[in-house]
Length: 438
Image (cartoon, rainbow, N blue to C red; front, side, top):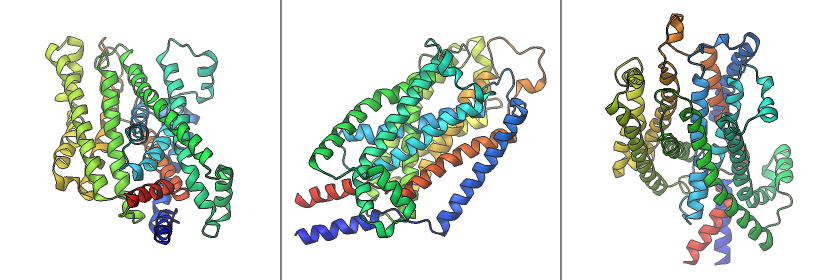
């Protein structure tokens, strides 16, 4: 029996050890690097010539950069959903998904922070936030909760990695020198003793309990950045719940996409099974219905009252220049994924993957629509301004920086999954042993 268990454990380890990039992996990494380099060049132009290279003006002073910021903040919630909520609820089927979620969360929160610096016309003044920040400002609240959330997410990624790093150190012959030194630096102190394991489990539970209110805070405070600004479309008490429900949805969609990609790329069919797609599909349907409800609530009440200040904003969304994007975001980001995932066949890996992509793409355009139309419809009408102040379409520099930031987040995910096991090895072994014992 013990020999069989050892063979099973060794099989799991061999299956889940980090794999070197193949040809497809190298091409993928090269494409991401190319996007990052183009984005870096566009940012150099912005630093050299100022924000005049962007299409942002006095009215649309928040453009595609802030849309990206809200998107990154939203998708980062996946770490607390999959890791914290499921772990505290003692949901074991999510074990193969926890590290995927944690890596996505860390990558997203890094670029949420960076894109804010990009949005600043004078990034060298960033330190003034810390020197002269006022606690009355929601921006300072955002800085505090984002920083806190980042460090908690990083620790939630690191602590469960320690047993796996010990396994990686025991396979020195399969690891190059640089990676071995990194593993040694990160986890040489971990011996796997009962005392260390108990302390680690306690720390992880504390982090899981802590990250949930922090995660809710980060999305609530981000929504308050809009809701405390007196603008049509933002003047809402619904914004906190609206943002949180949307963040849960895009996070769930991102995990389904990542599940399919890693399952195919690393041949993890035995570990990320159809059962996982079935369960995640059901969760995404629930989250999509919840977010759809908040969307109805967000638009129906102002549309019913139709105050003059809201009229131009709502008409622009429903039937005006933003209508194609608006109905695309609603239909592709929520309604179609619900229809696909409601049926058992739709919760198979490929349809679930397609639904996940729809959710993520729809979510990005939804964030764009939260930012831009409102800024173009202020309470006071725009009079005696140049025509280009009344419209906004990002310049190529803005597109390059936005796409570069998205590529950068995916590059971090790609690199981390190359360095560390994408599925927790020790946890998988432990759960397999429990299942065998039953």
